[in-house]
Length: 225
Image (cartoon, rainbow, N blue to C red; front, side, top):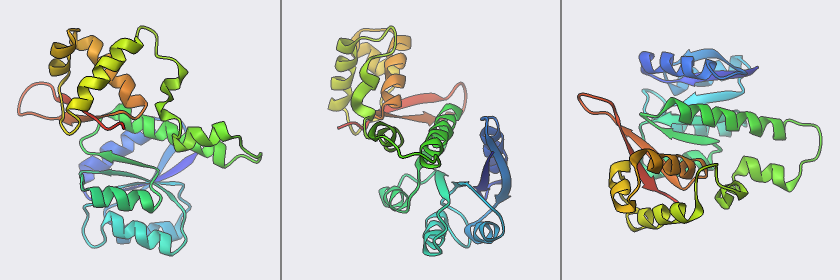
């Protein structure tokens, strides 16, 4: 069982994260704390495999907590779940060894994917045998642009390329599936299937925008090369 510590100063968000994490097989939340100082104390007294970490917290924020963790050579794995979009925070978190970075508000499926990727990482790194290059590529995502050597059933390379080219022209913009569908002349449902595939191979990031009424909107931004 993978033991998880949640570090989040909003009790409702912390409890939601707990439910999300424990809905994935193999994970157990063993503690919830509200800031970096409490987290450091908890880590000293308990065995933790993974930390779900916020950045904006009182006393000791997430980035400085992560710095202190590494100074003490506590090599606990960390997934950031935070509202922070600042590039300096993202850069710092990754350089300090964060295995993933999720921006609030996020979709459950994105956190589930992060946890599933973490399980695969553990299988490779905690095994007793020497690993192959292909196994390293899986956990480092070195081959994420390979499109898994084949598209998912029902998707076509020419259509994917048209969507990719359109999104590259608007690389710094968040687009709705409606806007993309209108340009490509396909249905919104079809466009979303391609966008979800592009997100799975690291070419698109998905942002959820909550309005005052109705269902949240999904916005898509191209982040490939």
